[in-house]
Image (cartoon, rainbow, N blue to C red; front, side, top):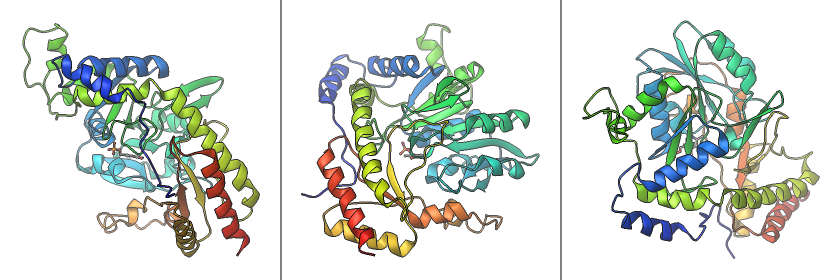
Length: 379
Ligand SMILES: *Cc1c(COP(=O)(O)O)cnc(C)c1O
């Protein structure tokens, strides 16, 4: 039997809720299911304000608008990330200043951030890679000291936490703004979908306006004003309530989803620990939790990765790599300042993701892990 890399989880309630949404007679944005989703998430994770968006990419674009990024402003972003993290700011004319990853794991190396700050720097964007927290105490201290926006790309980070001096803070609740993804490859999904969280109250109203095409329609629907109009720039960033209905069926089941994903992750880790002298396993710092978004290995070379992918493929197991250092991308290479980002490049060549989805059985995980062990024992 073929083992795909990913298989979307279905709770079984999706069609039921979509039907309810359709029958409610209001299927545009901010309907009943949108409210159910954001209420549940705000309560569970203590976000000050959640707004559903059409994607994480759109949530990131909203962050760039909220931070009022202007042409020439500098934004510090890790190079090892998805295109959207940087593109949202490039769209506003920002100069992207790429930072390197840690040696042990792909998150931005907080010790290299301060050297990149100039008087033009406006924001730091962190990515909680694989749902594992960046060192937020340190990064928040830097952003405060230099009066910069702190934005979290929390696309992969739902239901994951940062442990700060006895406090447990949900990722996405720490920066000024954060962006989540509900793309079908993430832990909870709606096909395409996302969310922005706003943790500084003074930006909530403007976020609503930007999301509603630059109009104050949200305040109008709450009865706070008697007519609405064009008050700012913005775009159409709100999803249909049909998407939210799908999403709600998932959010309700989040604990079940997470338990299964963590079982899979832990089993991979336990079995593969026997070859930890030959490949690098995921590293979770003591200030971070693991939301089992991803199980990855860091192998020793690009060739070794190609060989391992082929070997797994020959056994009908699909493994994938991703993220090519953005500072070396076709779009950016002639804009980069020439700094060598060695860790980002190493993850580009050597990181391999293994199948991880709700329906994957523990037997299959065992089988996959043993194929990998065989591969290394034969070398
Ligand atoms: C998935 C992902 C995105 C993009 O999410 P969309 O919802 O597809 O726009 C952005 N950043 C990171 C780190 C991601 O993993």
